[in-house]
Amino acid sequence: MAGRTQPILAGVVTALVGFASSFTVVLAGLRAAGASEAQAASGLLVLCVASGLCAAWLGLRHRMPLSIAWSTPGAALLIATGPIPGGWPAAVGAFLVSGLLIVAAGLFPVLGRAVAAIPKPIAGAMLAGVLLPLCTAPVRALVDVPHLAAPVLISWLVLHRFARRWAVPGALVVAAGAIALTTTGGGTGGLRPVFALTAPAWSLSALIGVALPLFLVTMAAQNVPGTAVLVGYGYRPPLGSALRTTGLASMAVAPAGGHAVNLAAITAALAAGPDAHPDPDRRWIASVTAGIGLAVLGLGAGAVTTLVGWAPPVLIEAVAGLALLGALATALTAALADPTAREAAVVTLVVTASGVSLVGIGGAFWGLVAGWLMLLLFRARRATPAPSAPATGPVTSGSTGEPAGSAPAVSLGSTAPVSPGSAPAVSTASTPTASTPTASPGSAPTG
Image 1 (cartoon, rainbow, N blue to C red):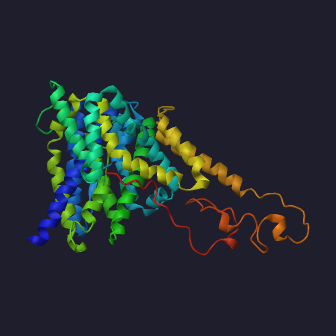
Image 2: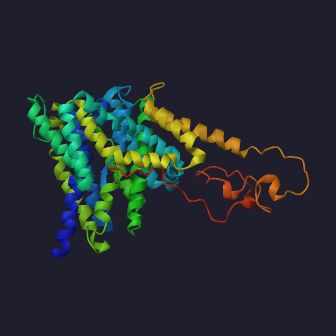
Image 3: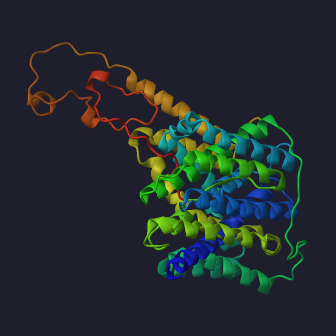
């Protein structure tokens, strides 16, 4: 029993942290996409149940701590995109197509490799642009509703200093107390679970502006870093099986309001690390327990949705923004790390964060397109050979500022690493023998 108690307790903590730290992001995202209070509560319920069932199934089948969660960056994307042409039914159709793409990535590894080939700066910048407007919400809340936001921010700061894991759940508890003390209710929900089905509608602008970015951000910011966490703890996760399972689950819950189910990143570390159990072969118990716990927590989706409905929207967005600050920092680091792609990353971030909608397609897609075009432009400029200077005799160290016998001005030693998928600006004869490492796109641990 002693060997089972530790992973079970770790699983309970994983479920509580995973649910409390980001369910407000999910509710805000579903509402931004056009869901009513009942439809948002239904979406949260089915996401919890689907994530829990997938975690239990994959953990029991593979005997690995495969933690599953909803796509928190995907929900943030819905907030940044705003109202979708065609309304909530079109959003449901986009959720279905995104789930289908995840299944395809599990069936055809080339599609997964194509997503992984997105240059890390561009993927990180797109994610940062999606998260940035939401992460400014705590500042706006402090100005708009200071009597509610100040206690939330203070509690978050204190817990972030002394018990970082519980900072966001603690801030959420303070926010709930503030809401209960300062409102008279008025929500239309209740304590019972809510399940509402919506027939999908198909809109080209929703498919391009929501389904494709939702697939990309879920793969780049959830499935890829989630896999990396498991590899870091010595596991060889069955990515194909996980993608097929979570993709089918995403398709199954889409008509009930679920936007995406995927591998977890932060909660993956809680279940897969040594705190779950000293023996790596016993840590799968933690992920299975976390899955069961998350499914049980989903039964209270109606109640928490009602509580959220009583609060000023900016306060709920503030709690969600606090939950995503770490993800924003990681995304910005990935976006700006490579000097050769920095301008392209900034363009991607600015276009995505602007929230512009062109021909009904949201800013995340256009940010990705703008970043790619910038990369191609600078790649073409770097690939253009400079005109050769006339020979003037032997070059000495004093004439060029370089030591005698050094390499030419453009050399491998002074050239920044080439982004994955780009052509080097030097000839193959001078290319190093070591292959260029493939960067994990947008490795922001969220969810």
